[in-house]
Length: 459
Image (cartoon, rainbow, N blue to C red; front, side, top):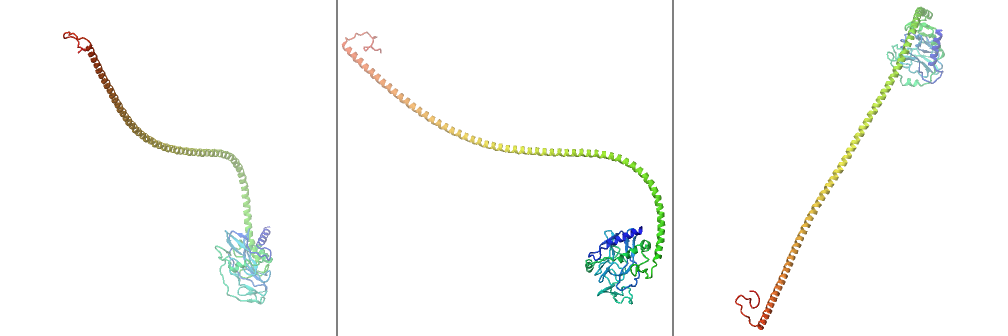
């Protein structure tokens, strides 16, 4: 069953590695491994069995279960004329070793810089060439029997490479494709033939070919054709049966070890089951405790969430309070600033009003002083006029009084004059009358000294 599964995996790997014949695609990775393949073994090439066959170098293939195994170098018939075989190769990339499948094409492409020997020295191909539908062999690179193969030539100018790296990358070959090889990557490719696939399957079914059994020294290194004669590294016929028996003994010992390990594993499994039961009981107890812990943790988380929610609410309230306080401070500051500005503007306006009132008062005072001066001047003028009028009235009154006095004096004088004149007239009349009377009356008698005067007036 193990071999059947292995065969299925190999065929699956080859199916992945090889698309349908004549597919015009570049060959990509088909499988990868975590460790590097062993070095390319040194071996002799068997004689070409027939005209038209070409050499496919041996290579390390990989089985996911048993690891690397050596696929012997072999002479194979190409699928058509004018095509060359580009060998498969391993390359290290992204932490793994990837397998790049080989292919047939009109040119030999890049094969990782691996020195497979026999014309495949890591760069290009020197084993032969197609000439008008017939393959010409370079007998300096390939082992041919000229009695069988007649179209040969000799070319010793190719580069001889002595390394045996089995992969491209750190610790292996260091090569990158050149322009011609990059162009060959885009040529029309033909996948490995069924004979080549059968040859790899043959290698995978021989335990002696696995590196785990041969430690990098496979019993069969080359074959003259698929399912043909097998050869060892020295070019002698390989005793594959003996190698497989030796590998079988190794396998038997390994199987015994495996059975012993299996018994130990069964014992360990029994112990493990007992331990598992104990572990299950412990696990149940642990689950119960875990459930209890989860319940407590749930309650704690709920409390924590509530506390966190309360804390968030408190922080939100604090932020809101702080925002309100900032708003109030800002409003107070704004109101204060507004009030201050309003008061300042009011004070400025009041100051302006006060200055205007002061100016008005000063103007009024000036006007009052001017009016007072004018009034004083008017009063002085009026007083002067009044004094002048008074003086004039006084003068006029005095003059009038003087005139009245003069008139009165004149009247008095006239009266006095008239009175004097009247008096004089009266006196004259009296005198006249006295004279007249005296003239008519007798002469008076003398009275003796104390009598009245003759005119009757006292003296």
